[in-house]
Amino acid sequence: MVAGGRSPTLSAARVLGTRGRGEEGRGEARARARKGRGRGGQDPRPGPWSRRRRAAEVAGSRLRAAASRAEHPMEAEVADAPPGGVESALSCFSFNQDCTSLAIGTKAGYKLFSLSSVEHLDQVHGSNEIPDVYIVERLFSSSLVVVVSHTKPRQMNVYHFKKGTEICNYSYSSNILSIRLNRQRLLVCLEESIYIHNIKDMKLLKTLLDVPANPTGLCALSINHSNSYLAYPGSLTSGEIVLYDGNSLKTVCTIAAHEGTLAAITFNASGSKLASASEKGTVIRVFSVPDGQKVYEFRRGMKRYVTISSLVFSMDSQFLCASSNTETVHIFKLEQVTNSRPEEPSTWSGYMGKMFMAATNYLPTQVSDMMHQDRAFATARLNFSGQRNICTLSTIQKLPRLLVASSDGHLYIYNLDPQDGGECVLIKTHSLLGSGTEENKNDLRPSLPQSYAATVARPSASSASTVPGGWRRGQSISNSDPALLLPSL
Image (tube, rainbow, N blue to C red; front, side, top):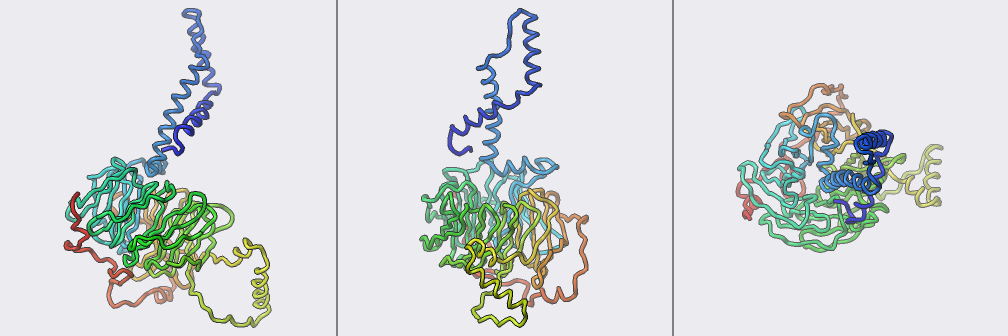
């Protein structure tokens, strides 16, 4: 849908109508004129109004295609997919709340994968009943999945995929742009409104209508259902964030996060921190919740602006990962801030460093902020750029991993050294388009130092760990769970 109504459309038609008048077009017109004059002496060359009408018709078809791509961005991504055809491209993909599952949507339907192993990618479920899926979200490791299709972009469908039954479906006034859910709330984000449902009975609790236009459906929901904080853009022109309490249904505060408009926002697992990035993509900030105070600031880069496509905390909130349209994924470490007095430097270089940092207090604010911004703790090099992708940090087989899913239908798994950081090592590449089996061509695992496994292995009493919200990693909702007994409306 082209924003602004008819004026941009007509203006674009005039611009497109001036194209294509090269030597080839003029040569065809002269040939038609000579042929016409030979038959009856009349010059059939079209007048200016005919040429404009024909150009407008061509422009109109181009504009309709462009408008369709704008209204259905996922379809545009499929059209711009790498070689392999539309059938092999992913229209959407998302990790679940505890990073134990990956959901993908295609033109044919959707699939769910388990992320419990590095070597094998197990497909948990697949469905072709709903074609052209552009939103698919799974509730933790349960059987509840929410699906939205381009065939009915205003309708949300909630399924119990193990039983193969539809729990309910809801229709809205405009296209659904994004869906977020935890064990307490389900959010449906439209361009100019947000609907808050109680996930146990799907009762509509609140409709936020006084929100700025949000064409990308950018919003975040804390997975800790004891607070269910919601964050969404508060301005069209600046990086303002509105923090909303999804349980009490009241606005908590407004955070002036960036000068430019927002590109990404995310909560940590406990809902105590909120990270954000602007459209420039150079600076990532972390704020405490619910007071909205800035606690960390990281610099992703300085040379060029990028589009942040994914921003996510690790489950233990020690790391923050950001991917973009470039070939580099950045991982930042959230060091504990201490109020202890720093020790006096014992060397000349240490003394000069301390004097240099003190001098930044007298520099312009922009320069001083840049000097105090932390850099990436670790990075991962992708073998592609320009493709839409999402990333997450997860513990698989007791080791920390970086996972990157890309729109070309692959899942990349990297090793992350939580002690020294540095360059992450690619250890496995899986195909998401076939049966879910891995590709062996990139399975080149370099030898790791023996101390690495010892430093990253975490002792645990059992294979399942408890995380904020009262649930256990990998826990499946039982059939008696209220979330699976929603009324079929």
